[in-house]
Length: 174
Image (tube, rainbow, N blue to C red):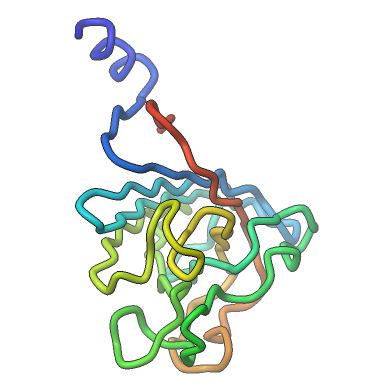
């Protein structure tokens, strides 16, 4: 027990129970954006915690894209918004929205921001059926704000950061 507590203290790790996934967000489109996203599933609900740095202050769009491939310089390899329900783009939790429509992260004056969201709409799972499984998708940070209206992607601008979502077991690095 002391060993586990020491690891958490020294390395900022989190021993979460249940299913877990994460994405390391790397710069794209010549931006300075980096960050990480942690997904955890307990009692059938998925929580995501996204933190980013190197972003211009103000609201910045973040979405889940359909393909967990961030290999292209502009992140176009990640495909479009993840939308297994074929809904219109919108605001998370309102009448119509994609499963990838997370929304905007508020970025402070130092270029940092954090967003925490718990899926209360049963759109996400970690390792569940294809239409809900976040594994193999990508977290994409855009250069602009999601207006929650424009189709198909909220007029959020270029893809400034991208990270493929992979399943993790045991300890999650923070």
